[in-house]
Length: 170
Ligand code: AR6
Image (cartoon, rainbow, N blue to C red; front, side):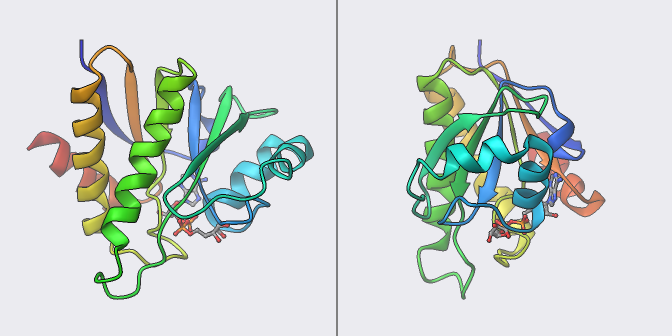
């Protein structure tokens, strides 16, 4: 049976899922936004493991343990910095979702939560990003109907939650 997709307004660091996805930067050594929140809650051991990964390119995804987080793992991905929409931003964002889902599948992780990748510091318009997120997760879960149980779009604002709820209802 295909995965259940849902949107939730929550702090992603509180979710007890198999893996939360981190909107990281190419160093994987922590930062602000959701990345900062994940590193603060997970503790120093997370940055120590990240240091062994030698960074991450935009669109790639790499996995670590969750340490002090309720989530068992963190899948770190790096979204595109939004310029004007003509620099491959949508394709890079699609790769973030595809590669994160692929890493989860390779590790048998069935419940996942995504933040709204690139829509904070990296400036991607939230409405466009939500469409890429929902379209890509729908496509991958249809391609692999037995691989996932629950996929949560973890929104940090009511406006993002509204965007996802509209897309998921369509
Ligand atoms: N739980 C869920 N979502 C959150 C949380 C949280 N605790 N905190 C923030 N968000 P951003 P980006 C939302 O800026 O745009 C970092 O410094 C936030 O409201 O975290 O991909 C990295 O190191 C927004 O909707 O990530 C990179 O340098 C979404 O998470 C850079 O920022 C993404 O915002 C990455 O920028």
